Length: 259
Ligand SMILES: CC(C)(COP(=O)(O)OP(=O)(O)OC[C@H]1O[C@@H](n2cnc3c(N)ncnc32)[C@H](O)[C@@H]1OP(=O)(O)O)[C@@H](O)C(=O)NCCC(=O)NCCSC(=O)/C=C1/CC=CC=CO1
Image 1 (cartoon, helix red, strand yellow):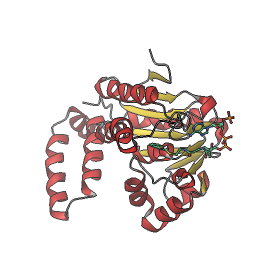
Image 2 (tube, rainbow, N blue to C red):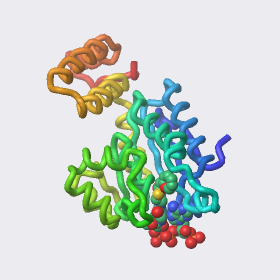
Image 3 (cartoon, helix red, strand yellow):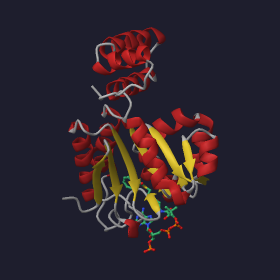
């Protein structure tokens, strides 16, 4: 069904693997179309309770396929971003389920932005991030400015964006850009364990936390408190909340259904 990605659901975890390893999984028009379709599929599928985005081969994603935009035809940059990149980022943001970037190798340009747009970042110890836009005279896009400055602070974000310097997994972890780093040899298995743990949590709460957390970035305290109260009304009426409380009194582990 897909040509440039692979999509598979196992144990409530959807793995979306970018699959153009010979081009470091760089984005093409077709790949964007398929990523957005797969993300919508994951959103709709009630069996899916966690989404993992990763790359085939040596890289996570090297950003825009530069071959595709070097045909001689003038590139409509803003149209390209609005039609292809921005909907992908918004699909991840609006997904009521956790989305993990499993960064298995190089993440450059919009590939780094894609990782930043995900809710959590797990990295193999040989992963390298590069805000490569500056190297080709562009500016970070696909949320590259928005997320980077919020995740690592404006000073570090500017340094990375202005220099285009490579950032290795260990340093990315040290500055809080990456949540966990795992040895490359056990990366796929470590990501699976992490993702399945998330998939076993109360999914509705995760969706609500995600929304409240991102919304709080541009709210006053008063608005954020109000939004938390609104979210708690929804969470408090879920079957998973009831199960959590019951399990507490039964002195057993809760068995959440994601409902
Ligand atoms: C830092 C790198 C990602 C990895 O470096 P390295 O490990 O040394 O690997 P390489 O030898 O450079 O690359 C391996 C092969 O993959 C091909 N490749 C890599 N990146 C791309 C790409 N973006 N497009 C096409 N092909 C790519 C590379 O040519 C090699 O193939 P061969 O073995 O056949 O030679 C490093 O590769 C790197 O810096 N890549 C470029 C990063 C980059 O500039 N990305 C684009 C930024 S712009 C962007 O993402 C978004 C937009 C959006 C809108 C409009 C227009 C443009 O950009």
